[in-house]
Length: 90
Image (cartoon, rainbow, N blue to C red; front, side):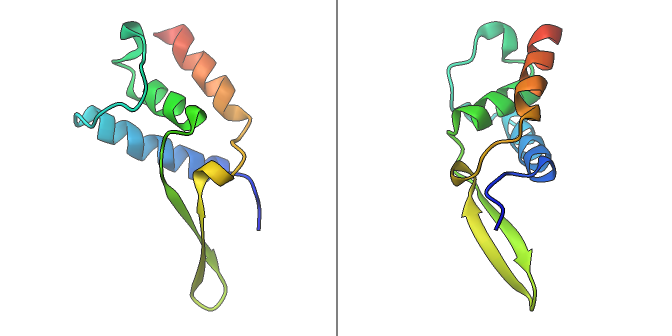
């Protein structure tokens, strides 16, 4: 199995977590006040800090699944670029 979080899994996790934060879910990090209104940035910072406890379910043949915690996977390199882009625009 791949030991890397794919960019598709990463984008789905970020989108779901940003939606949770926008609906008043507690933020798991101390984020500077200037960034708190950018929910995608907060979600990306949480993912990079590995404070999220999320299980990724990857399909296998014969209707089976492989489940892995995201903290055991390497993060995509694009995540740092995404964080810098959001910090620049905030």
